[in-house]
Amino acid sequence: MSVGAFVLQEIRFRKASFSLGTLAIMAAAGCLAGSLALLRIHDLSTARLLEAKRQETVRNMNQLNDDIRKAMLKLGLNLVILPKEQKIEDWYADDSGSCTMDEQDAATLMRAGVISVQHLLPIVQKKVLWPEQKRRIILVGTRGEVPNLVKRPKDPLVNPVPEGGIVLGHELHSTLGLKQGDKVRLLGEEFTVSLCHDERGTKDDITAWISLSKAQQFLGLPGRINAIVALQCVCTGPDILNVREDIARVLPHTQVIELGTERRLARLDARAKVGEEAARVVAREKALRDGLKAEREQFVAVLLAVVIVASGVSIATLSFNNVLARRAEIGVLSALGYGFRHILGLFLLKALAMGLMGGALGLGAGLMAGRFLGLELEGGGEAFPFRALVDAGAAALVMGVAVVLSLAASWLPSLMAARQDPAVVLRGN
Image 1 (cartoon, rainbow, N blue to C red):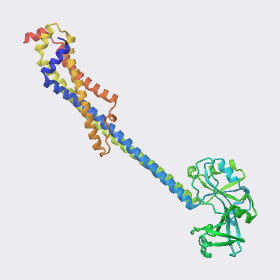
Image 2 (image 1 turned 90 degrees about the horizontal axis):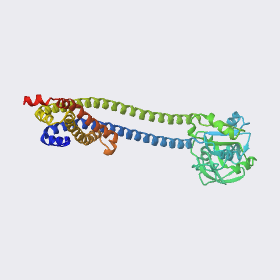
Image 3 (image 1 turned 60 degrees about the vertical axis):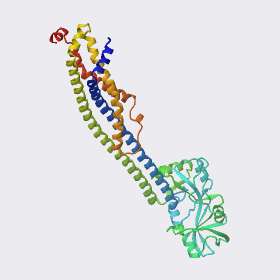
Image 4 (image 1 turned 180 degrees about the horizontal axis):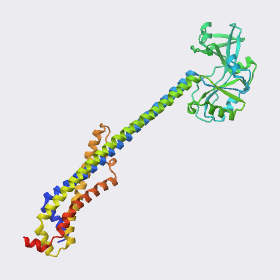
């Protein structure tokens, strides 16, 4: 009879011993497989949680950027591009400029694709006497924003004033009793009130806006402007130096000043702080999850050590008892010519079968137990499929540990059985 046949008969004859050994291996393998599944669920849950935090951060930042864009609309365009010869103090003092530049400079700047500025609006602005109303006002001639032919067009921040229309600041329309749709004369020509602004508390309250071409006609400046107002892109942050350098490369005969700096910087600073706090929240969450994983790894390491030692001792004890119970059988086999290798192989092959069976059962049971426990510890939620909890490497590790543990625990009893002297054994019986 072959060694394999002897092993099968041994398993059939001593089912209880083989079953107990298989259960011991199953416990060790199941504990290992469950621990791997538990830690894998922790990693998957951490990744899912952090991704949700990142997506929430992106949504919040997108919303914040949109809020800032809308706030910029309320604040107005925040950059003014002036001719280089224009004295800044005169611009502030007179609310107008004595120097002019070509109206096409705005189109040139837009075609250059400078990303640090957007929404370019050429204007001509001058403080004039409104003879019909006998009061001084700021007259602003404007047209629609210069179209962006390079990138996707953006919604305009400032709508153009229609030909024949006039837009009035709060102080003007409120004191004159004008409302939208009314007719009013300015510098000898009739205009229709197309819009009345709310109170802003700035010089806009005494400003009248008309079309650029009509203002150029009134001021005797055909094809000329004295400023380009624009919006600094929030992507550049608070640094105006980069904007000035970008514009100087395209329009070296100009200079740039800022409007509403404190409010703009406050909004950009708030945006930066929100982004930083969001990053800190994700980092803190990751640190907490890493700390929790370290605690679980420590617990798992202790549990595995205890279970593997207990399983090894149980298998070794069962193997020793098996050898003692089969002393006479071993003596007979030796007397019949079965040598050291055959008898050693008989016991180790049984241990191998026990390791393979216990490992397979432990792998399945451990995965189910680890999946259930892991989901409970993570507070429920969407379950992870089994294929996500174990890969070929982890399965091979569990089976390898099961087989090695079974063979290692059975080695000394098997060696003791193979080295018995058949004469001594048979004489004792």
